[in-house]
Image 1 (tube, rainbow, N blue to C red):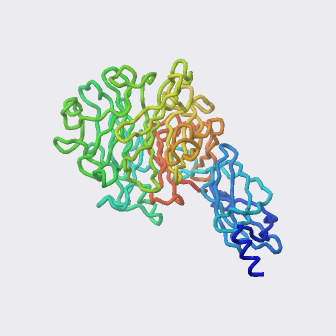
Image 2: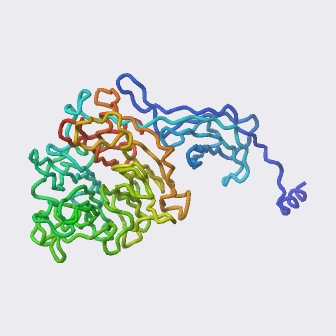
Length: 500
């Protein structure tokens, strides 16, 4: 008998595997929070249960969820004795087909698969901080916060700034005066989930930090607009690269960058006298605040065809891996641009640029049109782990709730799409083609502090937002945002994801 077994082994012939498909597979939603007496379930997790077939000799189980928008999969494994597992890292408000495989070996090269079950994850629900159900009763994150809000998280190797969150924002200006400053607001302590004030409350440093509009204006820098502080890895110098939008003498908006001169403090961007940048001489070539042009427009030297303005830029890199940008190839930027004849008739669109190690390269289709997210404003990309990202944006073509007499920006309802870098090209790089089609965009739910859902008017006036994991954990996700009701001046506030 041993001789026969040895001969069969030599011929790579083995006895049939005594495995059978798992039975009674079911999937259910995972409880996350209770708000206003309503039970919320997770937007990114599902619980899966099953029973093994009698006599099954499985090595382990593999649980696979396949979503219906792009066909991407999420999987996990469970021991041979297990009867349940949790799938994580799922897309919100998305239908998944789930199977359980009984694997014969470690590599699962031989398996028996169950019948599939389908279930839909819940929408994300973000609750604003404060009281009641009006903009006026929301809690301000910084006392003079008004517009152009973004947030920066520093990692554990940032010295005195280690594990802190810092805001770059436009402070309130006198009524009737143009809003023309990009300032800094600082936290009082390292971000800790046990201390909400450490990531929800900030102290203004307006007037002594950041960038002011040039007076008189320079050729490229006249009015300072939105900004984003990106902490650069210590191996690359250990500083804050401030990306910002500014209009020049030609009234065109471009995206620039400038590096801090005080390391990770990120308060001083003037290579001359310490302090703010505010004069044409400082912003001009050779000046203490000379910026680098990141996204040029049509007509500039090395300009980008069909891009007449570039605004509201946001840079994305794997922030869950490290909050500090290592400047590696494949990081990407989204930016708002205008309608483009022959490419998009919508008034607001988003272009897409990829970092090649030394410059931002705007992506184009074969017909010469920029690759665009159409009818999208104030888009923000958020790392979700690996080469996966979320993109939140407003759809200004949907005007339900807009106050006809209000001059304030109305961005419409907020939408959410996902990207998976494994879809096309290099698996670790997120190309434009790795994003879901906008027809797959799902809604995002926003709640007042009392738990009531915001209506179309309140949601439409959410603007200049930045999503962040202040402690580095996806269990705590915060939205730093400016908001108005269409009547009052915008204020800087926060919202927290209740059902991650």
